[in-house]
Length: 302
Image (cartoon, rainbow, N blue to C red; front, side, top):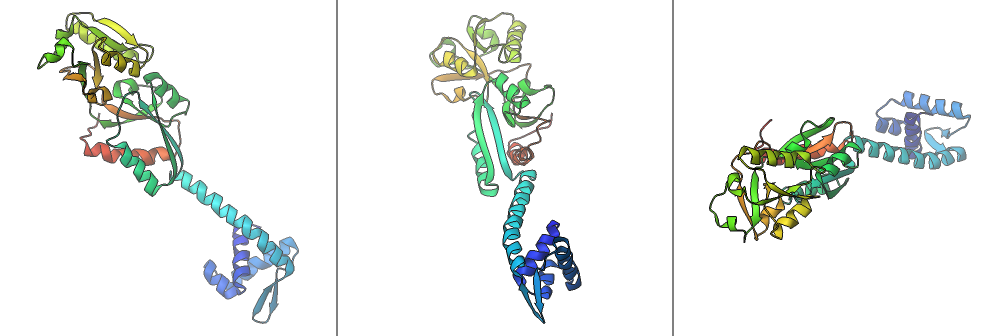
């Protein structure tokens, strides 16, 4: 028996009228009769008793109808679930966000959209370091990672979409002597201690900043932090100054003073990255929704 034949039989068993069942199946009555005869011949069973215009299930037909009804319903449920997964409206999505990056202005709208339109999709969020975001994308522990452009650009097999343009800032505690200035250049910071992210976590970040300091005529005194959270804590406690992008939540701290870095040789813009070998169908659904936010916030193509 094929799935189509099971459907034909169950419809006929429910209607107990071949003409009515054929109409529901959008087929002809002779074709339905041939299908039922084929099932009876294959199973060597009499499924229906034809008494003039009246149709009855035999005891064997009733037993088969009861069992196949459950099997067919389970089949339809399984197919629907698989189709929903394929369309990206059912399944799971694991999202990683760079330590200290705030997404509270746009992520709740995306979360709400999935909750309302695709409630069968389970989304989980976590903060991670530069290095762990990349590593987890490669081993599929994460489906999408939000990080800086310079940390994701030119990574083998990683694709990304631009989310929002960002710039960098020089940050320090508000009680720092330089915090009293109206404007601040990198050259003004030549005698300061810089808190930078460890090269083990993100070699691009520290090398870009050190190179920029060289261009301004000095080599900085550096304290390396293992994570961005450690870096932020060192600045909060007054151990030194740092350079962070627009999206870092340290800029929202009322005890921190920030000055825009007028020029830099790198792009700290926020991007959403994923592994091109990850075929999770929810990824394009999420990215399409995120793209609406990006377009509304001055997205430009690279």
